[in-house]
Amino acid sequence: MPSTTLLAVLTSLLLLPGAMSQTRADDVHGSGMGGGARAAVTVSLAPTVTIEGGTPTTRTDALHATERYVSNGYELPDLVVRLHDDERGCEGHRGLFHFADGKPVIDLCFGEEFLALHELGHAWEYFNLDDTDRHAFQRAVGAPTWNSHDVPHKFRAVEIAAATMADGLLSIPATPGSNWNRTCVWFEALTGGPPPRQTTEATAAVGTGWSSSPRGEASVLRALSDLGRSVLGPAG
Ligand SMILES: [Zn+2]
Image (cartoon, rainbow, N blue to C red; front, side, top):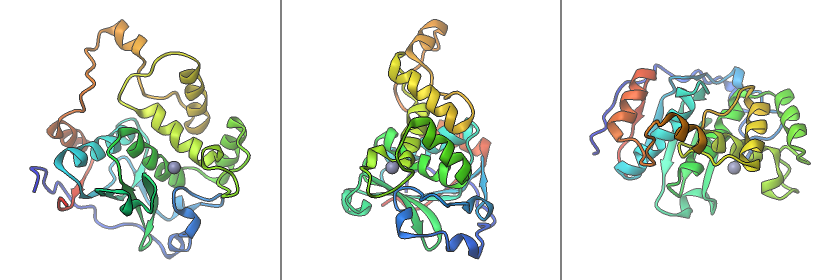
């Protein structure tokens, strides 16, 4: 077992039967339009995140990605994050957000920060947006569909939403320019505020001594402990 230990246990998921009926095959890797599960599942800045499998490093990285959301005010549901050694755990994808036994689950088959933030972005939008929000974002980015499988993956608004959340929350500073400007516009369209991610310009100007190294496990756990709770499952 890694040195991470059980910090606390959330009392229970407020998962009502209605939420179970929201679980559809097309929820895999993002929501379909017509969600509305947010009334049935609690989101908070203190979600219980159960990490299954992985190494101490990848488990810490997954927690760190979660912390990027909640420490910046983006509420998440209680989640199970399963860390896999290869793509077999993700149905051939790099990562997946879906439901298992009616509970939100993220499977990660690669250890990149962007991927973890992207799949968490699917969880965030599923439980925090309604269809009006989704239509508005789809229009803002000019996507032809929210999540039609007739349209290539990268052109679906649901994927642009998850990628935008990941882009705006990465711990590596962004390079100023047109790509970053577009991310800022889309992030604001999605969340109502600017992205928390810093830029290289800003970090140089204030001399924050930013480091590209992920924060240590103890630091991440301390931050999560301050914010709420985290349950760590056994290492795989
Ligand atoms: Zn995705």
